[in-house]
Image 1 (tube, rainbow, N blue to C red):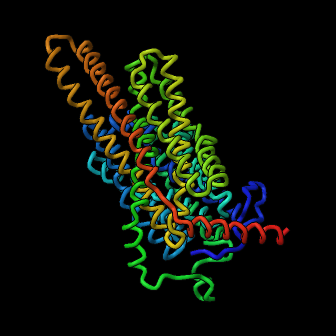
Image 2: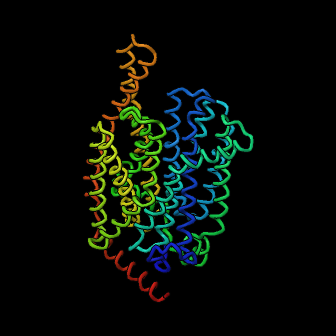
Image 3: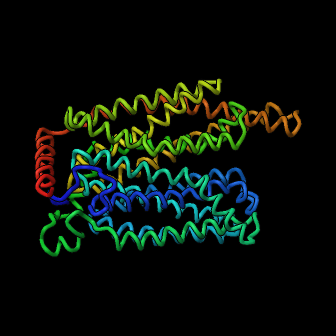
Length: 471
């Protein structure tokens, strides 16, 4: 897809004259805004439940729909990136994706709310474009670190909205808006910001270090695949893509689900306050500032030591650590020990995500977008499956608690149901941790040919020579 020159061999973040570095910053910020808007409604859910009269079932369904829409969007957007380039794809995604975010501020019924949550999920496809864009802007020696850092800083948006959205709501209230409807204005503002970011992306980035796809095609400087459909079919037939699909489901998908259910779990299991639980979950999300970058960094480091196989070996190791940490956490009843293993889980799961996308760019150089889309979709499929699993276990446990304690008062009944749900989620985390550990073993099946290893070395040699000459 890309020419073998002008890629950045370093991640010098202050070099804004460099197109790869400028693109890195803009795509990271765009991704941050997308995640901020995608999960922007989460801090306001108590207000939404009260305003729209959502049932517990509808609340769960809204969580599931938010990640379901992203699956289809990620599968599609990767192919579009290969064909039209990341600049146009991101521009359209930001502008069009902002529409359901804005419309969420105007919903009047639970059905309208669920529909908007489904379509807002499409903005989560921004991850694929971010990974695609950094993959073609950076050389093999640093691409894993660049991918992981841009993704990690973008993921911060999913946690930063816990502080940011309430601040926006407070600002809105200061202008005389009623507190109970401030969430509506906040979502409209988030959508407008996303739309404006689309304009920035269009005017201040380009598809590759050498120019935009349309320009390169016109000048005959961009390799093309004669039968594009056959190229995509070859991606679908590559078993390594589907292993990484499952791996990303076992990392990013599990992170999404665990953090989405952790507030209630911490309160019910350890007896801490809602505000303290929320702050703890926020602090784990903020670890994306460095944790995902570490995964990409060590992926690159192992790649320099052991070649492409080294990247796979590191991914196997860190994914296994993630599974073990979650399994141990699920069995703890002490808040002190629980926090230790939850921190280790948070660190390892984000490193596993970074390590996954230190491998992705080397599977098939001609279809980075398609592969990124499929693997990225795996994260949301994993989140969907894990959420459905935990929802099922919780529902069964709560129903059993209701039948067993039917003679208790209302408050005692609620306490019994909460305890039963907590126990169900605990056993669910244990099972999920075991699944992640088993998934780690499957990564060992990912193989690269001698020709693949040689091609990466040659590409790096060219990029380093170009960088040296440019200085």
